Image (cartoon, rainbow, N blue to C red):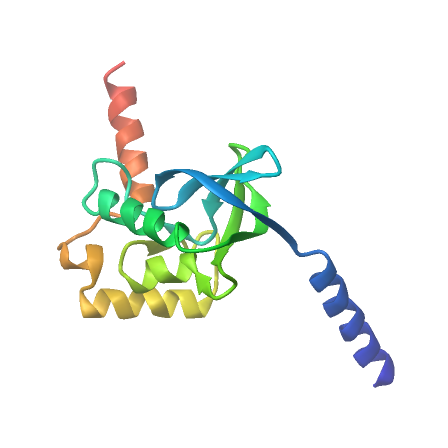
Length: 162
């Protein structure tokens, strides 16, 4: 039993040590789930982990973008790096003043879908469901199209016009 506890403790300690954070100044917000962070003179494109905001041309795109801009302007921005995506962007959980989780705020406000393909956090699924049931943000729109389906449809239309 002692050895099991020791193994669990060492795994937890390694997980804590290996957590990577970026802290810096936001220099540009591209949309609700993507922005540029300046860290010691180097720019990092940040993509929010586990959420997907409406794309340009979709209802609530501008609202989500403005919401993100306003929250990011309120304090120190720290990004817990979870991954790097195919475009070289840092994929992460964004904390503002170590207390505000931007990813969760977007879900609570009904300005993002929980991107279950990349995140299995049941709390985040509940946040989306609660916003949906309360008809907050984009959930007032009947038949709101998830951004990943929107992007696929846009790509298909562009390919058909070639």
